[in-house]
Length: 427
Image (cartoon, rainbow, N blue to C red; front, side, top):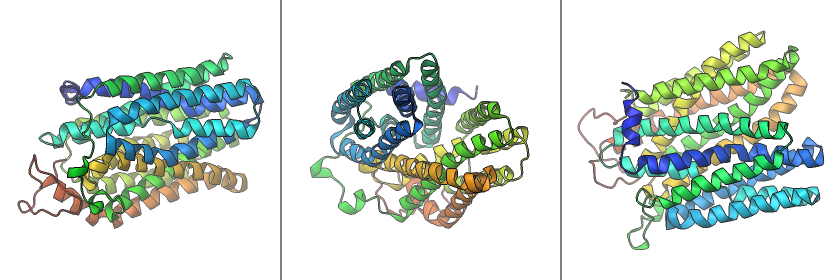
């Protein structure tokens, strides 16, 4: 059966033991931001206060995540994760206490910022474990492993927000926040207990040079720009779809449209991970980003919620391959001693783009209507396609060097080993 690819990965010794706890923790992390909004709104009665607290959470999460990942790369997951989980639990407790005490808005925003600063980077840690587990003699399976990670994230962002909303709707917003923190801490604790699959920390005596550790590289900057543009797409898409259905007098259509988009994404991600693609990852990136651009152009032409639902099937289906290709190319681009940092920086770039687009698209929609918001999504997708095209040769060079490195040897960034003529990347 095709799904044996996923089963064989999870049967790899130690794989399920870290992947399942990380997936559990991801559900909690997917709940956290929305749970904070519901918690603050339920006590203050205003979305403005909830938005400020949620904004404080998002900003510190984006800024601090790469710094925590840097500590993880230097000292190891099993040393950094436990104190991070304790800090996260305490930060959530502080925020809940401040809300219960009717603290002023500035104090609540600070509480939200503390929660964001202590978010455990479980997705980056899980991806780093897959890379360490498979890179030696099973590198061809890395795309499938990252597809599994993408599916786990998609499920988390379906189940998590739905659970939080259900608890809040029944009058239990505090329970949603506590449940989010409990799942995050429980999953993180179980992950930290799996020491055997954790990537070894960088040892000072054998540490790579400063040049090797640097992420200020052209190929990685291309990936950062792509994630920033994808974040803009996400941020503008959510607001624009909501505005479109309201303009057409069908606000109830928003939920089915988002569900259709998520469903097409889950199916596309599952199917994409089942196949070994012959085309090099940079070429796949160019094709998929081009398909996303075409899908966003369709958004500018739709005239009804039904037509919008059909268009988001295409845009939703292009997202999972992108979310697989980004870590695949990152693993081939950066030194393994800074891999967790690299994954976290990509997440921060996406979060920054999403936050900026959410604010900008709201202003544009107020002035030009929902099509103005869709114009932002189309611009972001076009920027991704152009960046993929401009960086094609650079990313191909890096990918080829990674593919031509003999198993068991250490590949350094910028290393351009020449293998057999016409050698293909393993993915």
